[in-house]
Image: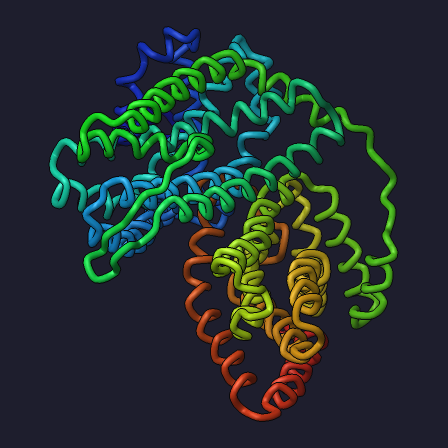
Length: 554
């Protein structure tokens, strides 16, 4: 039990998650974890997560109570409300279709959250430095870290799937409802276990700077794999009769690699009885769970010790690329903003935590429009026969990375150095914010948008080049407004914390609808109003010229 800092007063109310974890104490002990030590470390981590940074500014009991609030748990209701949209699945009287879509969605959300938001916590080296010097085993430290992240991941999973789980009890019965709760819980453990095993394997064979790059690239690879897997899931089913919602499933041997289907197989056994394919997939699920448990037990005590390799990389002299130097001269308004531009470019280039938080989202935003485009093709239909609006809308999907960029630029592993900027004159803060926004535009968004636009130009020619340019200028303006809206302080001035790990996901969900409306309106305007694209071009050039010179001044 936690007492106050002076060790007196009433005992704090014990959180529900600690009571549940206490039930698993024999399991922890059986795998070689000192449960009492692990629980103490975990309790400390969760207490720190519930406290804000600026405790000096808070005085009095009311302020203290306001401080000790975990923002992650208090925001889960948003995901529970959004999960209501999944209830459309129950118009189909096909359990396999219902839960294939559900578990595909769950794993996409889990892996994107795990890789983008919790990797920097999983790869944190401070535990080994601070706790590893005490009589605490590496297995206990690793279990505390995994359980710490697991609490957030399981809570997030149940919030995302709440509507479907409740609807399952109503539409498909009590047995199916119990089964989906167990399998949803298991899916969150799979996401955590697979990520830890992947990192352990990489950490075992590489060290230093190469290790950091491999981890970043592996995250991108997993993100692409999950989006592609979701596309392949859609190819398994075909709607035969939309009037009666009749769905036909076309399974092949290759679909056995899509492990979300393993979670669906038990529902097929419940509704359709014993069939070979469902029995085989259920056996795969059991075997996979056992294998992940064994591999995790073999690697959990090694990941923290191998993490020290992250700090053994030789520091390379900072060098500026031609792109950095050229864009700094072209876009910076004054020497002060130019200095901030170089600072931001180098920080985002060298800081691993920034990359692990942002790169998976970038990969998903890149691959999703391509998957959407190719999935719209039918039979022998040539690519150039597609609707023009299909092409014009594809690059706009790169805007989905903007909320994650706005959130990622708030955090830094070297956040304690932000006091230098707090002491700077007021007029110096606007150039800093403009420089950060310009670097994100040039370094992150421009390559993404440019690559997809280049594909469209190759396929369709330069007919829509003005519309594509307008799309980029619109994205630049939206980036400015999102950075201004989400800025709670100076960039790179906050510590990475597990309690704030879902900020990027929430921002993306809130961001999507207004941007979708604005983008669609602009595309329709340019498509059906003569010469509208030229008027839009002039207006967007003026807007971008304004924010690049005067933005953030207030």
